[in-house]
Image (spheres, one colour):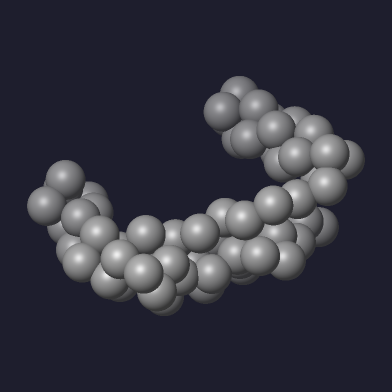
Length: 67
């Protein structure tokens, strides 16, 4: 995707894409959602997670980066 296309991604589509990818690693971000306060910025709110979930997420990202 070009940078322009990335900036035009629907935040709801992005949120669901991330949610599905996280489920593949057995991870859930309970506060994952679209930021309603800034629709023009198309922000996805990742929210808060427990420390063990943060560590598991970091491990999953590292494993993905190794591929």
